[in-house]
Length: 125
Image 1 (cartoon, helix red, strand yellow):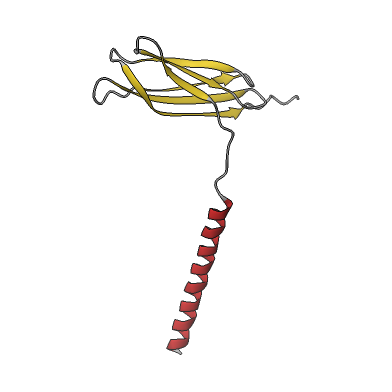
Image 2 (cartoon, rainbow, N blue to C red; image 1 turned 90 degrees about the vertical axis):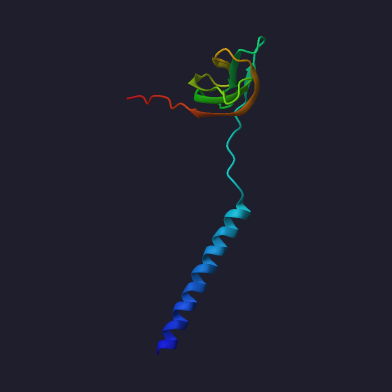
């Protein structure tokens, strides 16, 4: 009787492992979900102490958009970062914000990302 119980437990474990492996394989084959890319630019302006953060709303409607840019400077361990958010009309390119370097010169953009979420229109009552 003890060996039957061991066999049942082993078969149950194999069944769970097979199911888990099949699920992992299905997720890998399906690939990641893709969202619309949001065009943005984190540009170091002449003088290298000011950066302009621009983005375009790629959606068909007005959207709440957010952009984050991080820069390196000439000073070790001074990496200014800014996150800007505001409503952006459909298809429009806007300057989201500007960032000052704090007196050090910007060297390059080290990280950047942007995202937009379509604004819902108020429902009529």
